[in-house]
Length: 291
Image 1 (cartoon, rainbow, N blue to C red):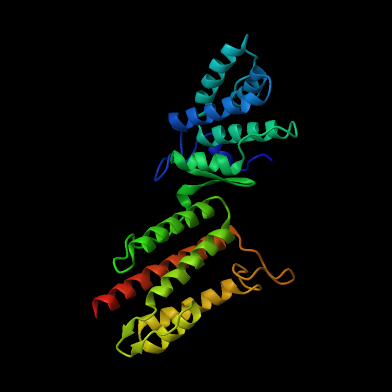
Image 2 (image 1 turned 45 degrees about the vertical axis):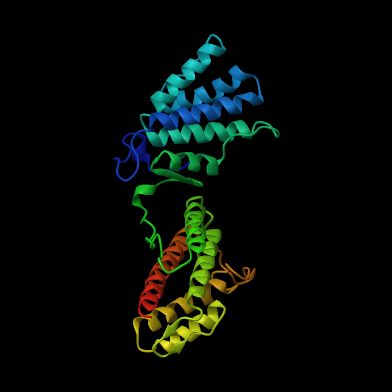
């Protein structure tokens, strides 16, 4: 499936910003060439290398002519890949489409897919992401809401698991797996809520053991405060995402009335969840210090 992106990028790619948008960095080009060499183990080597070279020639606006031998093919492949890398969107298009056409040419053949290509782009801070059928610019995305790195009142082991889960949620979202990213976020939210179990407030002690009961107790013990209002919103969000006719994240999706999350909605919910978590962690710290 050909990638779709703004036509003007073929002539002038976006300027660099938070990411590398204009040109592919040399280390990313080298990583792509290494992948091509691995793909070439699945057939006649020169033929496979010529297949990829042809796509890079096209991206460079040059004619594809077969090299005289395998060694020259490898040299020319790298040369034309570096030429194509002067325009990052064209390079990504060429590499991805070469992979797809190779993989589709035989049932036993395999080449990097969109997930693998996206992983490589993120590794080298290249500012694009494949969200089929489009190639999108990461620069225009709103960064995920920041969450405190080390909540000082939570156990060390819990903090480590907390950070791992946050990173996993970010990766899932970047890969276009929005439902799973939100699901990971909900798990985190429910886990953070358990930190309030047994916490003493001026109005009493939180008795609940599970998310809904803990939130209910906290709301009752924090009437008239910002925390009470935030917990009200949080409970509504949790209920919507849990419902089969809402977000369909926790209890399955209603096949008749449910509407699957798209990636923009998933990003919104992930940001909301992270905002609520950041606030809850601050409140937990405040309560712990007030003892």
